[in-house]
Figure 1 (cartoon, rainbow, N blue to C red):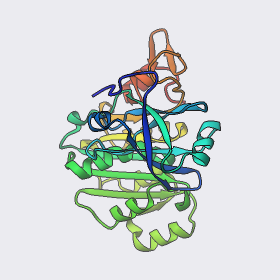
Figure 2 (tube, rainbow, N blue to C red):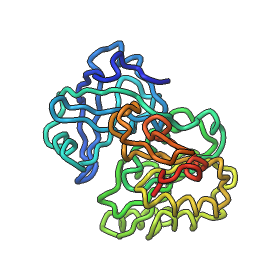
Figure 3 (tube, rainbow, N blue to C red):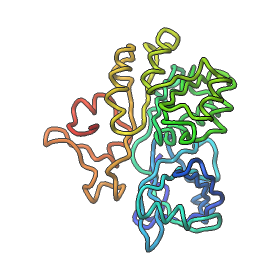
Figure 4 (cartoon, helix red, strand yellow):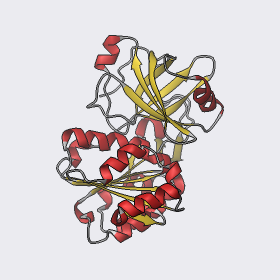
Length: 296
């Protein structure tokens, strides 16, 4: 799997099929390429990203949050965080034409993880790229068990509310645990319905509560969230006896061109240099140990 588009720099036009408000600052865009040949052949690995371009306005990288098993469309979760994404939120509607190039970067080592338990640890917007691997498992039963730990400030800021509520009701070999820093009305309702699956605090608190109930020692772990989260989650996973060579993380910051030409995403030193767009966005724990500044 790799570049599917004919022109690396221009990308291909895609029509917006649907726009769904997920939170006050995040929207889910469902797209379909205008060229049926591209649309039918476009493939990717969960964890990869594309460049989203609005001609005359700008472009930005965004992780694919749909699954390669669900063909014919592409889903991207976009947070309003700057000039270009503000324009997208305010002006890109159903029927709009945008340009997509990619997919870029590496993805999760799915074959290596096959038939093992997997622990997904998401913080805030980090739920978006991890949704791709979650949907992939729902469609293929790729892992023996999947454990999702999702930490968010409050219920109003939680992504994919309907999907997560459905999974909380119980789904074969999928186990969902939520942590809220603030208990708002929505969080209180979930606590009332699913008390054993909800923790007040940080996502690391939820991991600690499940010590002894989740087979951490046998699992692969994948995390995505704000940079401040990584050090604490890695420390907790190691404490829970997750093997260091089975810890993966996906990073999305710094990328600009997506193809390693601008140098904007370079991290590390002369002994270990990484391009986040080429060598990532999925990195191993060993990459973090050997590359200065990869997580800060």
